Image (cartoon, rainbow, N blue to C red; front, side, top):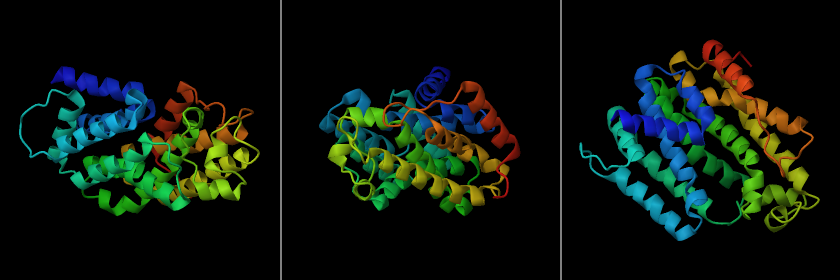
Length: 283
């Protein structure tokens, strides 16, 4: 079991270092469950990068559905992340429907279909990043978590949209477009033009609109974040970095179209420590 725990932790540390750091501020008896949630998220979010083809990717998503839907028992599957996740779901009575919705949303990742609209993008973010925040909140404090479900929605949209902006170079390289078609149209572009070459004359306007949309959700989150109880802070802690990422995108001499912005390890540690110890101020 100790070896499995190390594998799960290492999975998160390698694939999602910001969330890995956030878990270190959680109570020790909650960390294994949080690591299992974030390792599961890393596994399903990275399916396209590992498998490359859509149909085998869907098979892998179905495997996760079967693992989660299986009746509870003490039998070990032999997959460290799957075994840890099943234990967390059982111990904290996490809703399996949330995982089913997350897996359904991740089908979009496997194809190059354009994101139709802002509403579709917000729905995708809600079923992935926002659901993950809410599940983490349930692990941390099942009594308080339901009060902050709407805040988790705003937080998830801000975090996921910022993450998609950071991944723009990778997505464009493989012909994938998460920028909604209606935002692209308003910027004078299209999904096909956006992923080709330099993105066309409307690409920078579309990126600016995406940054503004992420900021809109982040501001809505920050307006209510001051009320978060200390018990729930670790679930929302990665949001401490979101504004810094967005600010750097706005101020960077290099477009997010071409290269992902980075924050130094020292700055990330400081921002996380400050929010973990002080919380969010009244907006």
